[in-house]
Length: 288
Length: 296
Image (tube, rainbow over all chains, first blue to last red; front, side, top):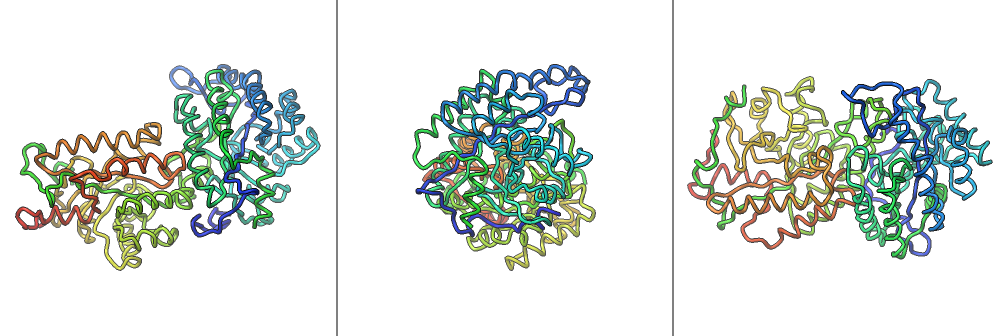
C-alpha cells in the first residue's frame, strides 16, 4: 500500500491539540539502538572506507568499530540512564539477545522496553521472507524477556509497501519509521490500524555524526535547540521529542559527555516526562 | 541554445546604475519551496542512507522526513514570515496545489506570489514532455489563484537547452535558474527575451544543510554576511538578495530560530525592500529612472 493510501495529508495546525498529564509539555522518548553486524556481509555503516573506496570483505576495521559499542560504549549509556532513572526504549536486532546476552540482560533487568528492530541489521527490502523474519524477531525477544514487543523500527527505518500489513498481523501496535510529525498518528493497514510514533532522523547520531559529519558538541546544541522549540510549542500542544543513539557512535568517550549534557539541560526544565514507546502509545490511544 | 548565446558576458561594474524607489539599496526576496516527492521515484534528497548503502525502494524514511515539512515545518516558517509581514514567493510543484491544499490556501490568502516549480520534484532533463509539465503547472496554479504565474524555478534549478524558450512561449516573464548575477538580467529566447532574477544556491538550506552539512546557525550567519556585503556593494547601484528555504529543512524545530534570526537582524534596517519576484520583475522592466520597459 502506498503511504498516501495509509493516511491523508494533515497539517498539524488543523488538528485538535494533544495534552499530557499534569500539564506536561513534552514527552521525551529515548531510543537506544542495538544491532548485529554480520561479518560475512558489507557493514551497515563505515567510519573508514577501504583505500581506493572499494568494498572488500571481510571488513574487519568497521566491524570492530561497531563492536566497540557493544563491548564498551553501551555501558556508558547504561550508567547514564541508571543514574537518571530513565528507562529507554531499545531498538534491538533480535539476534542481540543471542550474540550479546550480557547487554540484552542488562536492559531487560533494568526494565527497558524492547522494540523490534529486525533479526539483524540489513535493509528490509533485501530480506527474503519478511514475514518469517518478523515472527522470528518477535519470538526471539519474547523468549528472552517474557514479553512480546508492541513496537517496531525497521533497520535504517526501511519498509516495503507490505511491511505495515505484516507488522499489524504479527501483533505490533506502533512503528517508528514514519518521521513525518511531532505527534503520534494512526495509519491504515489491511490488517487493522498501526500507530506511528515520532522517531527522529534529526536528533539521531547516525545522520548527524556519520552522514553529516558534525562535530561531537553539535549533538548537544541541536538537542537543546530542538527541546527549546518543542517545549515552547508544548504550552499549547503537547509534543514528543525522540533522541536516538547508537553505542558505537554516542558511546564513544569523546561524545558521551554531550549526551549527558543534553539530559542535564532537560532536567532543569519543568513539564517533561521521560516515557518509552509503549507509554506514549497508551497515552495517545487514550487521547483519541 | 547555449548559455553564451542567451546572454553576453557583462561585468557588473560596467553597467548603468540601478535605482530602487526611495533610494533603497537592496530588494530582498524570500522563496519558500514546497514540493511533492513521488514515493515511486528515488527521493530527491536523503537524510538517512540505508544500512550498507544502495537505494532500496520504497524509501519510506526519507519520504516521511520530507513530508514532515508540509505537515509541521511549513507552519513554523509561516509564523515567522507573518510576524515580519513578509510576502514570500512560493515555488510550488503544480501537483502540490491539490495535495497540500491548506499550504496553497495559506499562501494565497496572504498575497504571496506563486511561481511554477515543475509539476513534481523531478529534474527537467528527465521529464518526458517538458512543455506539458510546464503547461500542467501553469494550469494548476492559475486554476487555484485565478492568476497566471509569471515566474519559474526549475526543480533543483534544472533546465534543458530549450527550457527558457518554452517558458517564454508559455507566457512566463522570468526564471530563477541562472545564479550568475546580483542583478536581474535578460536572456534571449527563440521568441523574445525572458528575465532571470537572482536566486541563490549560497543562502539556500538545501546546499547549506544537506550538501555542505553546516550547523543550523550558519544559515543566519551566512545570510547576514551576504546581506552586509551586498548592502555595501549597492552604494552606487541596487542589488537583489534572495533567501531560500524549504519546510523540511529550516522548518525543523532545532533550525527554525536561525531562520527567524535573519529577519530579526534585518528588521528596521534602512534601504531594504522585502519584495516578491514579481515586484522585482516589474521594477526591472520599468525602472523608476526612465519608465521605459526593457522587455522586447
